[in-house]
Image (cartoon, rainbow, N blue to C red):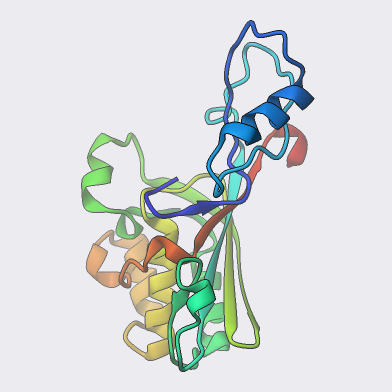
Length: 200
């Protein structure tokens, strides 16, 4: 994940001749890991499996705390945004982003130089509010560097009236970073799920 991003379900693969069973790998690994990292599961996979390249999609969640005073207990796990976002405007704008598009406007400029394509498919974007917390769930087949953070920043700008639905359409059809919103802090971003062939 990008620097500062959390992960609830980060998947990785390792090839080893070690005879330790999966249960022992989890127990032993967790005994050695720092307090903010934990192995949740372990599976034997074919040699051909690759955690990154076999992925069929990912789901990210971005958390926003909208209370007037910052919540010290969520300072590192949610963006403090002490305003009242227009959830319906955000949902309406999010629907424009869903689908297959060129997301060059939603990517860190330097990151595009080494990519074959900036076309990605966003399957869904859900915006939900519970009390002072807003969660934005974004699911897609793959994501560019800072893409989710820029999507969230764009939805916030739409809520504030700093961007319009036409700006989003322009961002998706005439790639220009200026059409999209700012990149929000990574503190509220979570890699929530990674999908594989059997999950889709």
